[in-house]
Length: 606
Image (cartoon, rainbow, N blue to C red; front, side, top):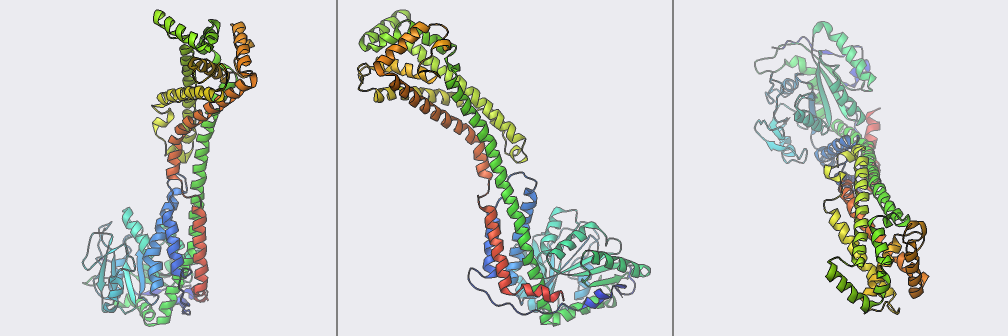
């Protein structure tokens, strides 16, 4: 059984004691209609908040997601319904720490056992809302706290709202017994916070043993920031410590700029057989609420002060969301840049390989020397003779013609280069993302390596490029004597020469130190081709073929980069998400001032 002594009020805090009367009234705001109305602006803000995501694992993301959920809950649970009915009954949400005696206090104020007061902690049950029977319709229809299912029976479902009527409770006033704000059950704490955000008046209940706990003060500071009307109940105070504890709590309230909050001190006493406190103990608090319920203007002042405080707090909260959205966008851009830098580096490596002659080494060089040194180049330019000779040689030796071997060597060399640069780019992009907090959460181990089908796609790309070179020779050299459209072997020989030219930096085919051996035949072949087509014409062909190859390489590498970029594309918010949030908050602030609600805070603070 709980023991109590005589009721006491705050001592040593006359300014607070003077504030046991309800706040002053404020004038009714002018009605607003259309898209620039306050409800319309709030609906637009809600849409902007819901449209903004924070999927990247940044330090601000979790806070932004929680804040966005809390804001939309408050818009749905309180702001929009309350704006639609400013004259609706005043909702007092009773919150407090575990075992503070909230349910016992609510039962005692309404003179009926409407909320179960248990000793088992934590208690998971539905919150209880008790009101006068004449006000039941307002709470039953669900405009306020629409996410909670209404029930007339006790329930263990925390998302249900147990509605109870009590004739002893004056009309125009309702109490909502919320879960413990420091419950060990996460869902209970979250629901308590949500319900407190839907209150017109916050009644915080604490005890002489727990009034300095951190959790209640965090919520009290939040209430102060939002301009909510607050009243405090200090319960179970030993008679010999009443003055000392009350004075200390008053000092703590004043330090947090909450000195104007009414403070009611309930001493230790016995509860009766119904679990109710003696009427003498609760009389000061009951009288305060009775005066508040009887005074329409006073109730309106409380509603308007809390409403305006909640509206005023939206702007900085949404600004934080906008900053978080900007951070998401900047992080996505930064991740994209790391990928793009890695694959731009791969493209540059390929381009340098086409300029410094490295692709002319090894097998390509051997096959080119063979192609030129055996006279294959000259013979194939004589289309019919070359074609017959190649068929005879291939049939007798079983070995492909030198031109085929050269073409295969070119393909193999290019594919090897592409596989190497793609592998380096994938590793670089993967490492860059792994070092970034937002990138690490998007990674898949497979991204550290090129796509499984990259070799096949690279081979197909090179073969397509080689066919493109031959088509380029046909189109560009169609009117030349040795590159007529019917001279397929002449086209093939010239096309191979152009491919080799793409690999050289100083001329359309390698010369001097680039070949080291076979220079005589190379120079001779170059001279013949220049005589047939003209030096500039072949250089033009080589330049076009090089550009075409680089375009195809870029497309291939872009597809590899897209494995990363598609992940940031799915995660990034809209480019203007932050600005949309700021504009929506600005419209709410403008509508708030136009509505006249902002005057309530000034009036209530006098």
